[in-house]
Length: 243
Image (cartoon, rainbow, N blue to C red; front, side, top):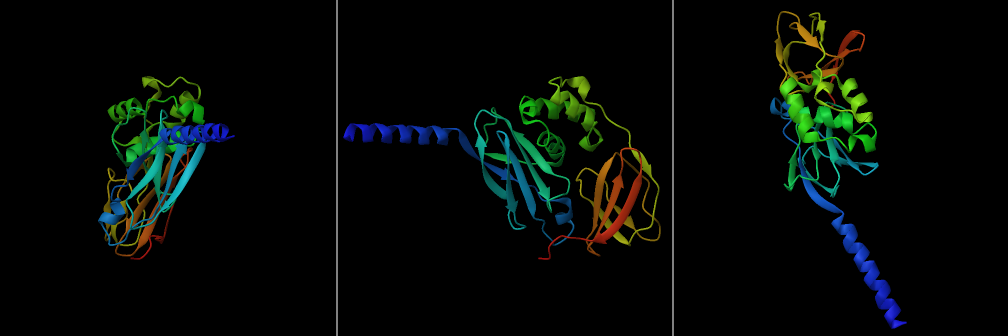
């Protein structure tokens, strides 16, 4: 009986050690958001990452910018941090070849990771994210202008290649009146503008939702561009928590 007990204990310890080896801890660093740079307010985040066929979530409060998550060994793990739970994500992928203990997210990486985190997991796990990011960078400085539908189709079909990366043209946004003040884009590589006596400057945007923040008025501007070119915009009080 004693030998049987020791045998069972050994098996349990072996399984425990094997389980521990299946994951490693990686620190996820969220950069300062463009809206935070222009105001004294801080954003909270919804952090999401893939774990096999599951999607894990963690709330990141406005005072935290580094979080530790368990990353499955031997898998490509996509990570996204969504400001206020819904805005343009910061993101990246932690691949089996990733050797650092800290992964720093960025917004172009968020554009790709947000796509790959939401499509067939078996298909997206086969993507060479580092190569995809490099090829996308050669195409455009702003990944929001990539044809994400084409990338998704080719990933799902196992046919992702260099020619899958195509840029799309945007739609011209007619100038319109907004509340006066500086309007800061949510995308660090995009432009901000100051509205004084005149309307907004001319813009060209692809389909999607685009946001600007007026820190003086604590107002948010949203421009929504449909796939068919339908455009509407509105202003609202920002949901950024007061500090």
